[in-house]
Amino acid sequence: MSGLVDSVLSNLGPGQIGAIAAQLGVDPAQAQSAIEHAVPAIVGGMARNASTADGASALNDALGAHGGDLSGILGSVLGGGSGSGIGGAILGHVFGGNQGAVNQSLGQATGMNSQNAGQLMAILAPIVMGALANHAQGQNVGAGGLGGMLAQEVQQVQQQGGSAGGLLNSVLGAGGGNLSGMLGGLLNAFTKR
Image (spheres, rainbow, N blue to C red):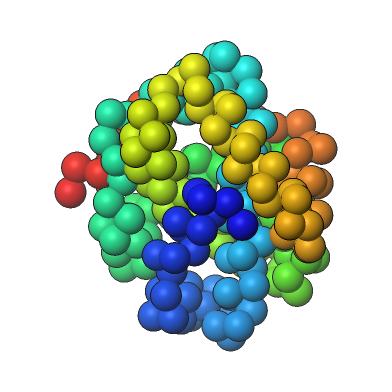
């Protein structure tokens, strides 16, 4: 996978995957597989939006000046906090009107129904944002370099192929949302804990 995708996946151990599986009402193996498909899809959606100057600027603003505390974000999302609501808002900006199609594609790739796929994406979106904030901050990447960094991440996933790469390609083939409406404070709800 890519550095960003690996960063997210490395923070999701058996306990977190079990908690996600319980929220979705699926077994942990199915949750693990779905997570491995969903994270690259979210990264791909962000890359698509960050491919324009306005989109990269909006995403950079949303990331804020602070890195994401992934354990805090995980605790909020898995502990019934406001994470999934924020995740839904992130996904709305990332995928726009194509969010339902992305959920359906994820469901088809993993054997989940579209509702569970959407719920999983909403759980993961704030985690991906936190990891992206850390990644960008660690590499000292601002709005100008964010699109290129995300494009490299996508390229690494696509080179590995497999069903996660196929889902990513379908996400990139669909029209994305518009990040220009994303509020800069979206991630700060988690990072200032």
